[in-house]
Length: 235
Image (cartoon, rainbow, N blue to C red; front, side):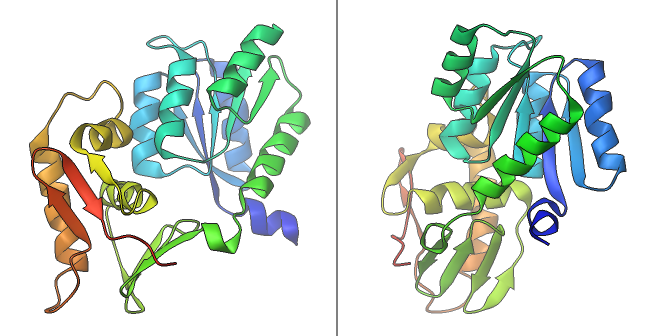
């Protein structure tokens, strides 16, 4: 059935310090329809999103540690996963601002459970990409963004969540230079201080996995003191 194909094991990230919302979302998890992760602050939501690769984000724009609009914009810098705002703010200005910031939908609290589930289902259905938009391909390396799967000459390669996010970011901007700071902000968030070591360690691991065989192309070029450029996709 289409519903099972869309929702099976979909990962839902709730960023909200409202316990009532968290209890409702956890009930969805217990019914087995989704895998649910809950963060009670913007910072913890950032950490969970980079490690868990959510399929949809449910976000309250009233967070204890940061502006929810800023968090939406942060997601939109590196991710196209659907963002559904759930908030007690019912004014049209708040809704318009959230949508312009990058949210896909907006629902006010208190909400009907059936309506929320229907909106989640609809957002996930819309997320199914067209074939020509879902992958990177160059010189035997293929990255399937929809499945988060990387293969080299047909053999699957496994990456840690952070390594995959870095590789995905470079692949989505293939042919262009991605600066060190841009990578740090997109992977670890706008409050991440400059740390070249953490990037070098992850990049070394990535290169070992995709450029380990003799005569393999150089997929990622270092631009000294600037950033990295990934071989342009021909897919």
